[in-house]
Image (cartoon, rainbow, N blue to C red; front, side):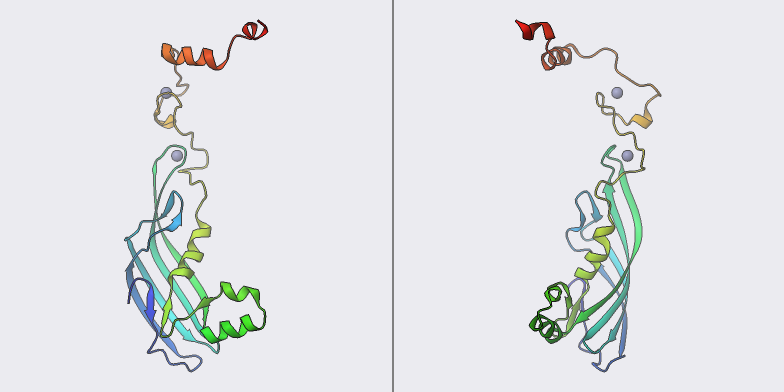
Length: 185
Ligand SMILES: [Zn+2]
Ligand SMILES: [Zn+2]
């Protein structure tokens, strides 16, 4: 079975039947948001309990994963191990179809079982991605980088600044803010 697809052929349909398993799978691509997420191919350790329900299978899982990102201000590496909980009902295709026939527009967003499989990836994605920061920071008040030398502000002495601009930059600065007298001419 590839990736996070679990074979449920041996899970009895009788309501309340349970199957438990532990899997280690490589993380799929794009399990994250922009500059932060689970590196593709890194290990996902997942403990899964599947329970047969009337309309499908209840998937309860805890996934141990590694999150890697970069502080958007100082570009420092951000690394964190996290456990993500999944608690979702996967519906039988016919149960989803029945809901669609009833005009339930949200039926399209339901998790659906395959013929004899359950793909944990969409539920894992939905449980993890919304919790990731849109603009990750190493700490809320990260001072970032010096705009002139590119060094981390926290590595520099307090009051760090650049007195003497490179003459080429001075020339550009003069162009950017022309002398007001010139404009009247
Ligand atoms: Zn930072
Ligand atoms: Zn500097």
